[in-house]
Image (cartoon, rainbow, N blue to C red; front, side, top):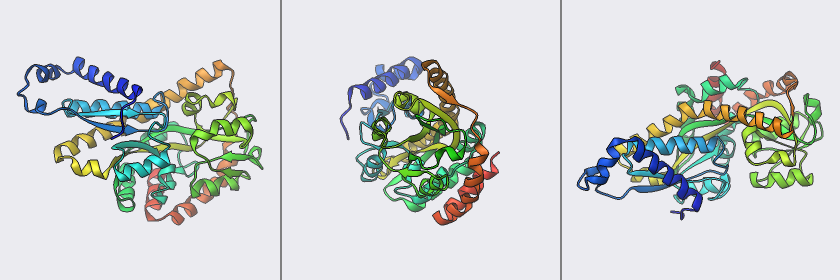
Length: 347
């Protein structure tokens, strides 16, 4: 298991302190060494993600850690490693399968590297509003379909829950008011067949690179635009090199919580139930909190002087993207077709 860094120690200590202060039984465990729940030292689990703790990934990590500590009476402790301390998402997706990481969060787009059908959740404009997105991520039908997809297509790792960082927008040095504004522009996109089909249909050139390279690439002109959630754009200070944010809201910034097969097999049935309940807590509470974080970031960005373009002609994008949805889903596979239909049924 990776060594804890200073930041992860802080997060672990914070949850341990919160647990002691809020759960009366915790003091019983301290003063009654013969109690069954205190018969062994707490077990620590690594939990990695590549975004700062100040993003929705941090919200998900906090919710998961707090609920798991509560249900396990402090016997299962989550040590968070934010900011790509354990690697970028593609590397962590390999480590979760080899058992070198216990839990992690990855975008559904990056998860397409191990389960291509996951790219269906990157289809443009299948989520038309933040409210619909929040409802969808917590909908049992969608959660079950996504978990079934990963269970059938990925070995050595298990998906526990869906989460989101809100809707994705375009940012660069130029304004985007309509789809024609992307014609001939180099756009950093997530490496999925979905993105590599839709963005060229908009007339732009797609560029793949790790998230950690986006800032420099925008700064040096390797790419003209990137696209991500508002809070991610804010937390990673991409506004410093790309001061124009255009609210295209073209795609959901969805993610999944993983557990390694190595850890899963080591848990008792009771512990598995605790883990699943903690993951469900993420799915129910994180989406609304993450969207609220986007709104808070947008207010902050405006105060910093970022140009926020709100009069985007989304219909010019939808006219191109919508006819591609079914074709792309069918090309990905039957799970993708099912997931697309479920999202369309959630209004």
